[in-house]
Image (cartoon, rainbow, N blue to C red):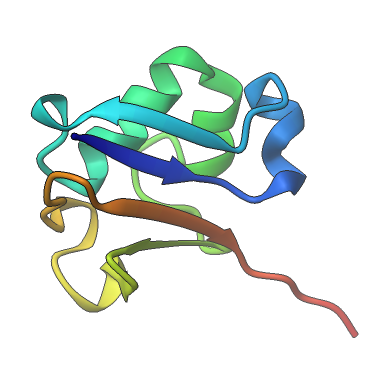
Length: 94
């Protein structure tokens, strides 16, 4: 099985046009692992998602199995084999 990381199309410029990443599930145990794997391939995307301390940026939301990681164990939220890690950017405006 694989873990799928999905990012919004607005971030595709930072990921070589990709919005979906398939990762081997034995390499991913938590949300942090999933984001680390994507950031290794696309460092610019990694910097758009997390700050210099590795924390999620304020405008970035991550969901594992439909649950917001901020309401659980944060980036240490467990990722089951076959799960989807969904990245969504908050949109502000006026």
